[in-house]
Image 1 (cartoon, rainbow over the protein chains, first blue to last red):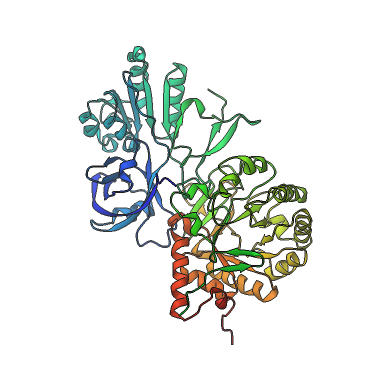
Image 2 (image 1 turned 180 degrees about the horizontal axis):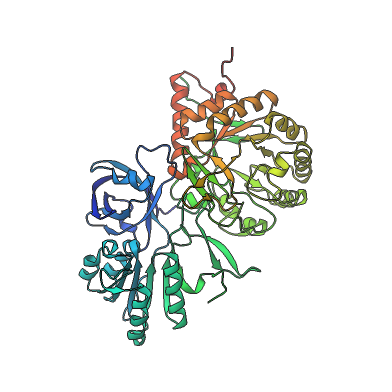
Length: 270
Length: 309
């Protein structure tokens, strides 16, 4: 069997506070790193926590095959991420990956639009770094403290626009308001949109792109258990050719990236 | 000293070693194929198959609790036709050099019979059927059969009449005396027993005030249920004289050996796979080391050898 996914015990090279409640952890990973595509994730086993029986999935933020390093950005929100934040350099941690389908490759000569809400930026950075040509990156968050990695995006040559709910940075309002403007500006370049963020944001991105007949790929975040498609925990509805018109697909294996045209909406839209 | 033998006989079914995967935790095998060398496993038990495709339950479907996991997947599956014919399911499993157990379920006795009869007619590569009468997460069928002695006997008898494949019956822990159910299903034609399925359980997020699964309650697995499972294996082993596959919170060789001492001929790994897919291989290696350290040549020689006086 060709191995595309690996279970690898990785040295922690760095685990530092990135900003506010956000941390960045970097691993030495020789096996997983070379296969990583934008939008894929790794499933991290929490060390020394046998009473927490599940791994924690995190999008790969950055990966370097030359250096054999892989990093994720995470927010401390619960018992698992709190435990992860306490991990020190030199600790050996088991990773599964790369998992999930990832975003499709960016097309040459067309507009590229990245829309990231909150730490959705973590799963979209590799799109910008590997893009066929620079495009536009729209970062949205509640406030300035939650705007992450704008410098990294800017360094890829992408134009970065920011929105915050409270106006503490960039446009005051929703990131989809920026998207509306950008879709109008770039309509002639038959753009492709790549998005990751809260589900409500993804729904809005899908609506706007589908209304204009623009290709869009959305990365969903669902609770996961196995991470490899075996347990059927992380399902979401996708359109299907059956009596109900939908089926549950596994976000971890059939996703997390879904073509906006395939997402089944409960309200019957699109 | 002679090489230690891990070969395990479950009646007419011969396993390379006593370690199999538990239904519902290993998909249909293919999901783990590039992470786990499937041919090294004693066997694979696939996710439950019904005659009809099933969406399963509305998410959320699982919640992590202290030392355990509550699940309410609701037996999502592609249905019998697709399971038997699509390359991701039975045709793939036929290419794997290990024992394959097909877990079957339905809403009615006829459903169970339909699956059993169809698999009986295309039985190449199938080591046994595991009759699931103990899933706590579906409204009809499942544990409504497994918590009623009369119905349990009827389901097993009907399946027995529909197939000559070896039959395992997976029992619920949620009855007063599991041993009574073990006797009943053996009397009605079950060749083996697997115990335990998950235990009904509930957990509430105190901030959202919502249960962790959409069905309010689900089935508890993981470390938390291990001592309960060991006790049930012990009770069942004293009640019936058929092979037993023990499961419930096995994470290590030490856990597995405990089940075997209590009376399990083989063991199944479930929830532990989610934290470490390598668990079955570690358990196999650890059992071998244990046997060597005690100078025991045949793994069967430890089964049921717990000292109680």
